[in-house]
Image (cartoon, rainbow, N blue to C red):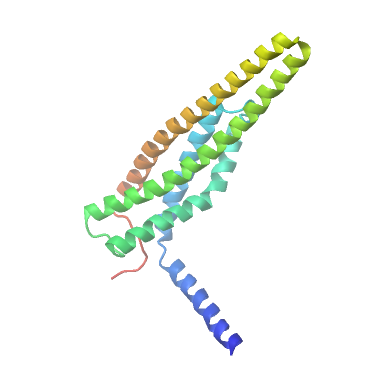
Length: 205
């Protein structure tokens, strides 16, 4: 009895998943996700090149292409979530300009949230590397100097770490604004290219 009850549940779960994937408007999701992923990736690499750790600024084009591609599945999920929420709120077909604008803003918010997380994670790793470099330089200076100079070196190391942290925090804040403005423009452009329409579901009623 237990096996018979579990198997239909598994089958129903698989059917539900296929049904959900079947209503995803992939011709809308994929273009939105691609432009968001690669645009947000560009700003992340640009910020890294400005304030990031020196060892992570090599080969920016290859890094941008690789990291943007890796982030693409997460952007796809964010866009699907935004469109699913829009479909539940406004129905499977957006019939008013207000519904289209609201749904597009949901996509912008979802994509920007993923982008900010990526920029924040990247900046945190940059700070980790920069902090290690500062500590290493401070340790070398302390070893080569007397106790008085060592105390000054320790204070200088702490000051440099604080400055590096502040720089990374400002970079994340500045980058978040860039991502938001860029994503607004890109989603608006995609919607405009589609004649002001935005499909939130493949279902038609």
